[in-house]
Length: 316
Image (tube, helix red, strand yellow):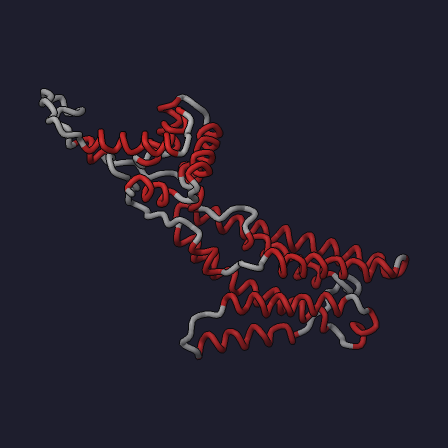
């Protein structure tokens, strides 16, 4: 019998590594860079009109020209470093009122340019990640848009607060961009120490739409047993172990080796057979959250991060 196409909620439980975590480095970066964009949009505005500078489009045009004319791979990770330096320069300039006034809208241009450079690379990464898990593509894009909106609103609120404090509390007008600079620089230098777009993409467990992920001892192996669910007269089994018996023995050995509880061992065996969340819920008569907790514990005890690693462990 063919398996129904799994739902994204099923995959989120049985194969959590196929989704980008909400607090992943990519989403955190997206939030911080959008904070810079929102801040630049409202900081120093005159009568509700944002300060704009066409200079912010120059770096974007240069990168687009490079990508168009060069046959080299798109320098995504290099853009992250360049965009981070550009944004930090913009925040630094914003902390110097006199210097910022003399330079026109240079601080805004730097903030917008840095954000634009990062967005170019981030959107390409999100599209690639969505392609690795088509069933979770909407979730990935939705999270990206939501994080971006939240960052923009946060930055805009900070910009408006700095504007309001310019007359009454001048020190606060300088302190706000300085605090944003500190937070941004701290995360870039510490949180992104080992971050790469390639690593973020490769860390997503691919999901093949239309293909059923199974391991040894799946339904195909069960059908090899005469009389199993066919209505025919069972044929005596030979003395040698069947593939199903060998598979069950392998799962039991792994469960014992890694000290899985009896219920975790059941969930582990079902995952190894390619069962989805709905099947496990029905078979064990438990809730979705309970299944999710069991899967998380199994992954932690086995020291794995994806469903493919689980299958490799069983097959190994």
